[in-house]
Image (cartoon, rainbow, N blue to C red; front, side):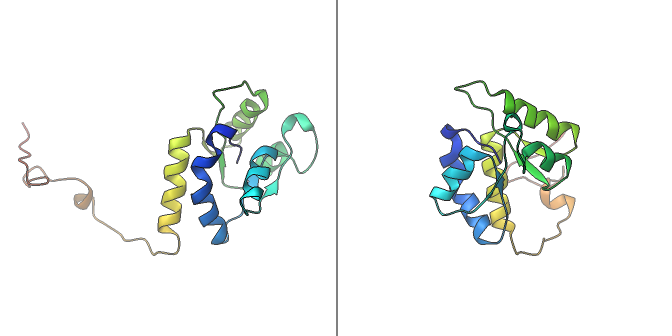
Length: 141
C-alpha cells in the first residue's frame, strides 16, 4: 500500500479495522509512518529508487501479497509510484489506483470479514421484466 498524504486519512478506519482482525499490510515509508502514528503495524518496503530490501519490486515479483493499493498523487509527480503500478500490471497483481474504489473495497472487506457468503440467485440482483422494480412498472419493449 502506497498512498499520498492527501488521501491517507480517508482509509485509516478501514485499515485499522482489518489490521485488528489479523490482516497484514506492506507499505512504503510515508504510509508506514502514518499508520504507525495511528497504532497500526505494517511491514515497511523500500521504494524501487532506494534499491534496498525488503523492496516493493521484489515483493511484487515474489507475490508476497495479493492486492496492491497505489494511489497517484495529484500534487507531485512520483516516478516510483508509476514503476510500482507498472510492475503490478506486468506481474498480474490486483491493483487499485483510485482512492474512492480503495475505500469502497476496504469497507466491503471489513463488512464481509468472518461471515459466510450468502448465495443468491441472479433474479435477486436484477428485476425480471414481468415483475415491478421498487413498485415501478418495468415494461420492456
